Length: 178
Image (tube, rainbow, N blue to C red; front, top):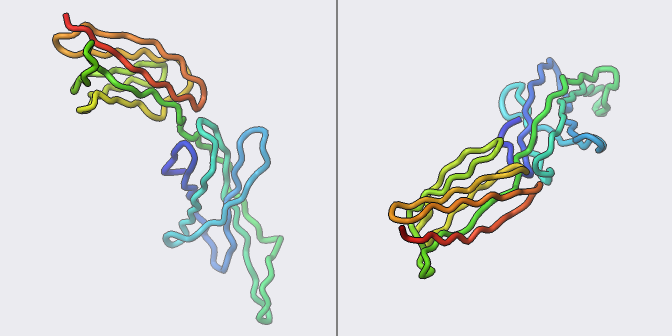
């Protein structure tokens, strides 16, 4: 699985055959029924399928399936006895939880280039605010995050944010001069 986002993935697999085959992927998450996605050949024997409308922060299981197709007497039919199933694999979609906001001084002016750090169990990221004082941390999982904001000549600000699955939390932080 490649190109994994919060709601999509590209499934990849290899099918080696000396004849015409129909190939597809089956995928599911725990407690749901399998869904199929038709595979397209991207290179010799390499099959791919783009899957969308997935749930964020969810583990999915998938496998490639292929079936030999016979062509007798100009009629197409699928030979049920020549079916192959690949090994079951898994991937987890990214979370779509995020923390974002602005950093301003006590007179409500945006503070550019403030350092904003986000620390959590599965994340440690740093960004600098833009000209509007804006910052953003995307694709965070559920959990607790410590947000620390610093800028030379100002007192640091620390916030603790708890995010649920798919949560979006806006912070408007005021930094006071030292």
